[in-house]
Image (cartoon, rainbow, N blue to C red):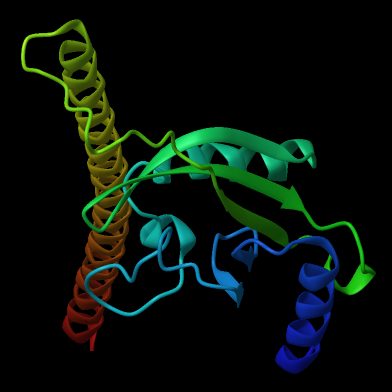
Length: 205
């Protein structure tokens, strides 16, 4: 299917179904189509350019997004995570995350729709300030610390997964090197045998 066809079908489906910022990805988590302003939720990852949604997801979104995509792909069902606190420039944004396997049209089956919906946060009067040491300020500080802990856990989980991937690649490389070494050893043994046979033949003539 041509890229232009995907774009037209995607745009028609998104406009018919959703107004919020959305992306369409494949089962490898590569983004095929952007709809609306997604910069609040996704940002380019450092290094080589790519469009993997898990690498682009902002802090506070990545772990839930990964789990939602896996569940949507395996169960072929819509997945909703409500009220995620996504770290934006200078603050946080509450976001509802929706992951939907695309079932129609036929030409787009197997693709996945990811929708980001902002959730309005409670507004407090600027004239009302929370005094240090009050229960309100303590609760707020605890909430902030819990959020930072969640981000630290998310970053740690990402680092662990990257390390596991690197270890698997290293293990695979070591196995290939070992296999190559065994093949070279076998070739050397064959050459040694051929050499001995040649020497034996020369002695006979």
